[in-house]
Image (cartoon, rainbow, N blue to C red; front, side):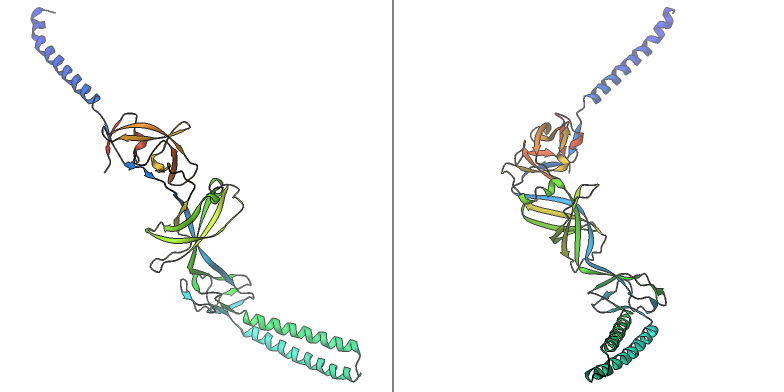
Length: 353
């Protein structure tokens, strides 16, 4: 290259080198910039002797019934509607009674005739004017007629379907002038004053039931998360589900007047109980627990430097959104909660507001 050409490009090359150097320094500054991650801080509280666990629950009516006619026929009247409140004994539906009344009249006439013949045979028997086998025959005929009369009366009574308890009409799958067969569901009635909440508990929880005292239960509807309704234990199955290996436990509760609770709604059952927990134990939110192989740990926060360090912890067996730490933490320690999964040893953090 001629000397005059090289001299012409020297300023340009110098400027490019300068810009490259400046760009490199800017990248280096960005690389060394400290990342401060926002984290929810949790102050560890003493577990004392009260444990709290939450389980998904399904609401059901404590008392429900599918009403059916024991006889078939044409529905003549349905004086109720779905969701209507009813009292015990209220008429739900009625079949056309004409044929049933005719059968009753015929059965009454047959019984009257059979009873007359039997009474006549009794008088003759006292006078030894009739054989004993004839008297027995008249008695048998009277008994058969009486049975037919009772059946006719029962059939007529069965043409009227009544509410077995105070409640509400949950479902009404039939209509007026519809012909139904015996056993066809005419209405479903439920009692909404007392309800049930059922949960599935694993064997590990069932096995420690005897260690818990002063158990308290409450129901929180997904649709009304700010309202707690007290519940009481009702029953539990003693055979585990073949697939989930869990046991169904049912609690009963009274529906609040200001809250409409219906069967099928989703809820959360909160179980609180006193347990055999050491005084040094602490309650730890499940979101703060991390795993490194078989070892569980949390991120302990140094409040002066606002850095985190790994702290191994030993947990008591159990399920729920709060677990008990037997070793590794003390009341008053500050740990990382939400966001803990994104931290590393020595990382600087700031409180997540």
